[in-house]
Structures are given as structure tokens and as C-alpha cells.
Image 1 (cartoon, rainbow, N blue to C red):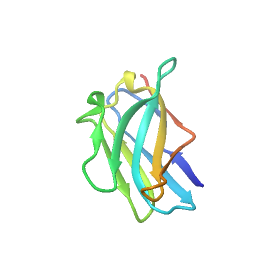
Image 2 (cartoon, rainbow, N blue to C red):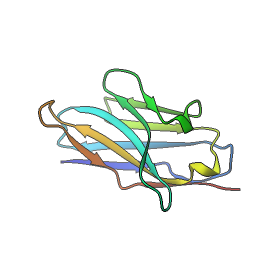
Image 3 (cartoon, rainbow, N blue to C red):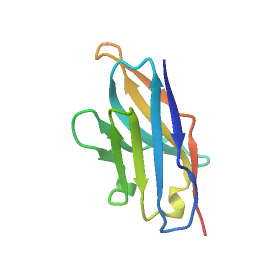
Image 4 (tube, one colour):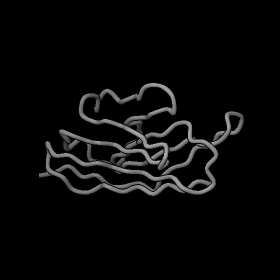
Length: 119
């Protein structure tokens, strides 16, 4: 089992910045993919950004140029730097990690952290 602990959410004014962190712990074999999803009230959960162990990050069109995803493999941690935040970025943000050997990978979710963009 893998546990994910998120931090960094909160209330910020439009145009402001926040940095989310998600640390994975537990029985970790190898983390393949790490990412962030968001879920606004009454809406489906959507991908914000993901970063593979090898290759380039992937971003939702709505956050390109404003958000940056990165990972520290030594710490099993993924980050989401969010700049130029807009009210429509308000949502619960969930960390996602895909872990395991190639023949038996599993996905894990964090508990979610609230991001509210409001003046």
C-alpha cells in the first residue's frame, strides 16, 4: 500500500500563487506516473497536470503557462506550482500516483486539498 499526504492548499486572491505538495510513503516499488486532478463543486474530477518518470509533463489547456508540475524522485514527492490563479481554479485538488512493477501497476489518490481563489 502507498499513502499520499497533500499540503499547500488555501485561500488566495486572484493573480496570486500557491504551491501544492504530495508526498508518497509506504511500500513503494517504483512510481511511474504522478499527477494532480481537480474537482470543482458539482463537477467531475479532471486532470490538471501529470508527469511521468520518463518524458515530458502534460497539462490541461486551462492551466498551460500558469501551472508547473515537478517531482523529486528521491523524496517520492510531486509538486504543483500555481501562478496567476483565477477564480475558476477554485476546486479540491487531488494528488494521483501510479506505482508498481510494469505488470502490476496500481493507482492511488490523496485525500484532497482545497484551493479557493477569491478576493
